[in-house]
Length: 275
Image (cartoon, rainbow, N blue to C red; front, side, top):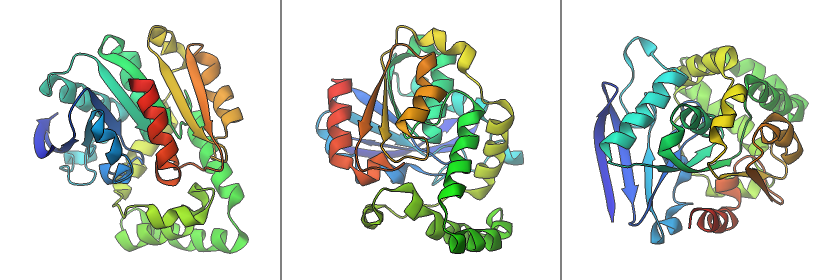
């Protein structure tokens, strides 16, 4: 069963897609500024076991742009909470990918009574340090030629869709262990305005470290690619040391995009954790 709909959440029309039947699992996409299609078709086999719930965050994908460019972490948390209420769910099973892992943690520390389990993949950390570390490591991995190209297009990125596409062409190969995996990546849109504004909010305000004790009774699984920009060793330092109940699973020969690069392995991990 597949259902697509727009729900009015926090005053905006938010695109929601549900696939399958069974216990619902909500998937939080990355970016900031990405969209739900990043997960598809890679996670579709999970619809045999669960109802997969995808949605495009504020101003992303098919969702309505926010007036006055109101793209904050706090608004995304409350959008997810209104989604939970409108879908009539009590406790959520959440998959958070990249920036979505940060959103999942932000939601969980504010609404721990409404979270059943958290699966974080391509995780970034508990503070803005992880966000900075990701960018630093990504830039360090760039070839000299790609770094020069990146400098040329950065000026266009904030307002120019073509600039954003060119940026992805340069950076995408660094998000995977094997460039062959890029052939499986679904073409998606990215809202550069959301990325810039939410990214600034993250850099200035993201820190859940002192609140992670609120997750003591919530099972947390972190699924990290072996060659992610935030390596398994680094995510131990940036997040897991503050979450003693969290477990780490490392996917070998895999970069940041676990969902795209190793979908079969990722799906089996998800099934085992949420069943």
